[in-house]
Image 1 (cartoon, one colour):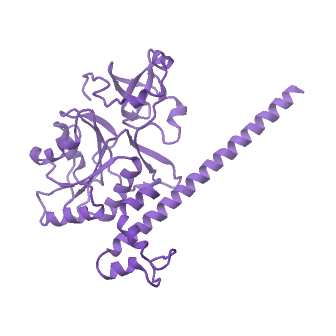
Image 2: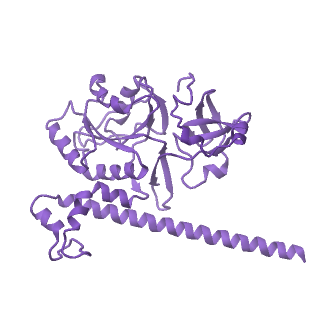
Image 3: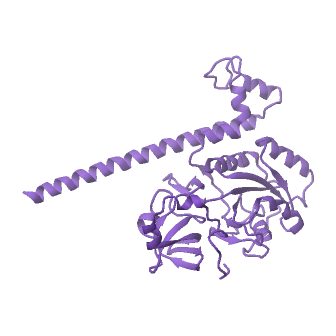
Length: 352
């Protein structure tokens, strides 16, 4: 990270961030943006420059925690975070493993570049998952297809991606060519924050390097036999670009589970939702039901069976995540009630 300083405006500060801050807050601390997060604390950037700051345990353990891109209030003299400012947007997923913990990926984004490549890595079902993630966060999605210089039938890849969610821009490019990468310029305006998400090896870090103009990240090659990539980025960090935009680089995510997004799923799969309204029965399960418009569309070649299958899969995943979240909140409520009861009993004993 360069040691230069940036104004709050250059860092992406918006007036809405200050609406819940009081004069006392500004007397106690100053706003700064999280550039990187480590176990020992955060690296933040403000009009004062870059600095490491300590993160109190209650903020580190709160719900989804603190993410790169967040705005925090830092104590003037102690280099310690006082509070986390309200977010405009935040990308959240369920962490890998069986504990179903919600995990922030990046905060206060304007654009999410969903990166795939024109080879065996191209996976429409995975792209649908990322589109749902972007919409759930309130972030504008843009699909970016790399390796366009090494593939045949690029137009077919673009056409397939465009059909996933009409209206979402699809850009095919060579991540190592500056002229090709310049197609992303409309989304890289000064003060804007973007992130690249996608599986390992699709050229995400190479694309990040090209956008930033310097090789901030080391990249590794792709195995030609199966088109699978190695992890090339190990931590989330935020970097400035020559255009004045900010890039949050994220590790390749092999397992991306949705934490929410029921409404967003209906948007990504708007064609299936519209077809379902034409079914004879309102509770049609699209599994051999009489008068099923969805299955008729599949039989006529209008709808892919794969797309319906993925829609069902993501619906089950979202429903499970929401049920788990409700269960966790109920457990937290019961624990809080029990703790209050214990403290009340303790005070009564002490008062005797």
